[in-house]
Amino acid sequence: MLLSKGSVNWKAAKSQIPNTRVIWNFLTRTRFLLLVVVACMILILWGGIRSSASDVQSFYCWGPAKPPMDMTPNEHARWNAHLQTPVIFNHHAPLEVEATTIQHVDLNPINSTRKAMINEEKILILTPLKDAAPYLSKYFELLAELTYPHRLIDLAFLVGDSKDDTLAVLASELDRIQKRPDQIPFRSAMVVEKDFGFELSQNVEERHKFEAQGPRRKAMGRARNYLLATALKPDHSWVYWRDVDIVENPAQIIEDFIAHDKDVLVPNIWFHRYEKGVDIEGRFDYNSWVESDKGRKLANSLDKDVVLAEGYREYDTGRTYMARMGDWRKDKDEELELDGIGGVNILVKADVHRSGINFPCYAFENQAETEGFAKMAKRAGYQVVGLPNYVVWHIDTDEKGGNV
Image (cartoon, rainbow, N blue to C red; front, side):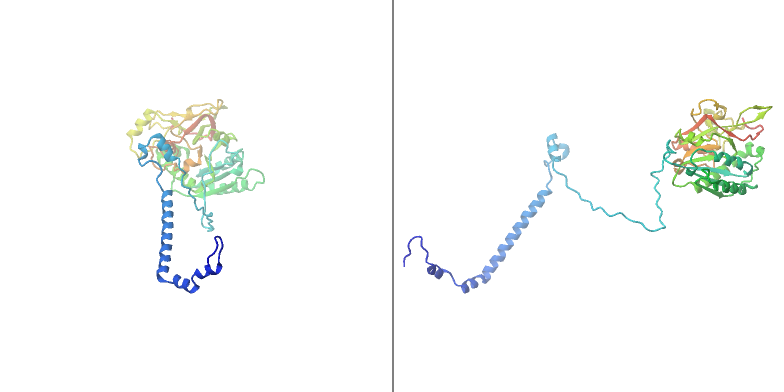
């Protein structure tokens, strides 16, 4: 039967569709299944090739195929114009150390500055002692008058080779001052005992005669180093070396010294001697000096183990002594660059000592102890400065002859 144009005979169309069994047989044929598998593999491989090409493109070397040195400015600009590869770091959580046997010391915030009081910088006062019992009462009297906050000051003493009651008197004075209820007690106090077997008499003539100076200065250097190594703490900004036989100094001496902001600083050391009611204001410390050409030539002519003792006629160095200069009535802040220093009163930035600058107990450039310390500090590039008009008064030792 013919159908008119535009009409559909459903029965006729259905008769043309293969039955379900025929379709299933066709789909399950081996050749058809193999064709499907091959087609799928081709699609998968094509997708992988496109993805690899995209990845390769992301690592493509930007810019022209030539070394950067051969590029024109425009080519170099285009070469650097592409985005940088982002980098994401995996930041770890902080490491917590809980072992009580591990101590952490951070020296980075420890500074020595002019604003010591504002910054609450800690000061270590060091005093080596030998047969010093008669001087300790005056020593602590002056110490108690210091205006730098005592809560920022640590005290440390080394008692060695003493035959008198130095240790007992020192312990008594420290116990008394640290028990006071006012602002006088210090942050801490330490007493170190160490004998070095140095038996030189404390008699003035014996102690200051020329022959005794080399062994004496070496022994003093050793004592200072033991005291320094034992007492210096990580939080100290300044080290103030102070002899026990000082009888007069300004109460604000620490602040005065710190204001100069020098690596190593010493005042002038004089003494009062009254003759017929007149104060002759004697000069005491000849160990603070400026080197001379004559002194250099002399040192070059000596054996390297010889220790030059300054202020004695046996070795004429021609050096300029700070003790012979200055006047306490003039500008106390006037400075003088020194090559050697005495040990009665020294202010040192703690980092100078931490850097290994100590008091040689051997001949260093033919000097020992404090003079060797100054030579060593200058060799390391530190400033060594004296104050000719800033006078600290030492006890009158009534020395006879020998000294220049």
